[in-house]
Length: 335
Image (tube, one colour):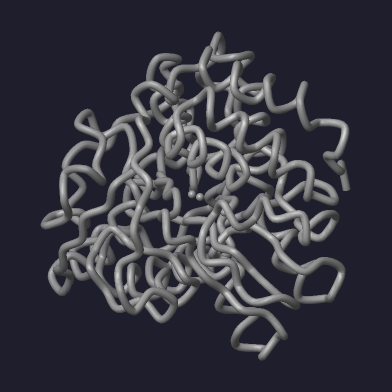
């Protein structure tokens, strides 16, 4: 993004011991977590096992999670309104917007994030970037296209699936990738041409991959978080990165202002930066903040630079999504 340049480093052993030792034996109430990552349930289980706490997970798509946060805070006018103690996989523009709205409780200088490149850490401690998810091409049928421009070939008419940025963070990343690759004017022209081959736009970022695997379409652009589960099941799909590169997005973890368990949430953030936790995230196809082995990316993919300071503005985000809705929203599915 399923989600911009990444740099990776390593280090762990002492961090885990400090994080685990400083946590109370068990919290009376579960730590409430909003999460839109594929690994969300497994992440909660790992936090519970390693920190001796209870958690309660509400999983949704990244677009839905941000919409919920904005609704609960009344567009930032009620910063303490988020009904979670920890939010996971907040997108980079959302972290920036949330900072201007005063939504995050800072946790500066997390001990678990020592040795990780500063690009993964908000300078004020508002959030920490777990790594990134990117979008990949899933193909079943014709030969795998090598270039994004090959997706415009009329032979793909009605055979391509993409997610909708109205509800999907992956889809927003895909849109920004093409706007950044070609420039906004030509980027929208590319998306208009691509739309001629799109059957429909799915609700979630993994939808295209699942539907291609089931034979309901020949090609899909989807989050890389779905790649390893499909390949491990020997699904009849091929996965590739366009030669132009792919967009990448940070999956930030932050503590909402008003969290009822801020101390435990801080320990969860500390543990999330540890090498063992990062290695676990890599098994889901994520490119992590630390340089750990990735079963999906044996070599680092070429990335499309995205100006998050520009696209991280609330007005710009709204403009992009509204423009997409006007052009393509009639093909977006709500289920």
